Image (cartoon, rainbow, N blue to C red):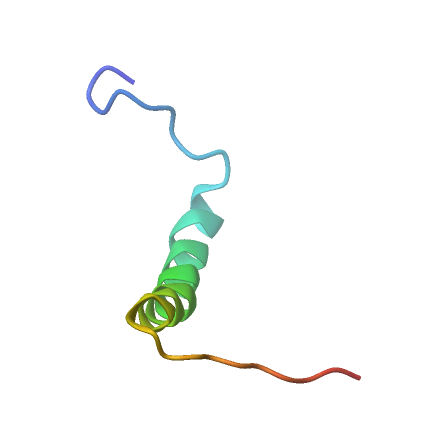
Length: 45
């Protein structure tokens, strides 16, 4: 807490992989949306 000014994550084993997955999937999609490219996803059961 003193060094970084924040609490450590409660689940450190999940924090990095989940963060990597979100950055890999959501960041490019949101960047494309901001640039004006329409991204459509369809699916279902």
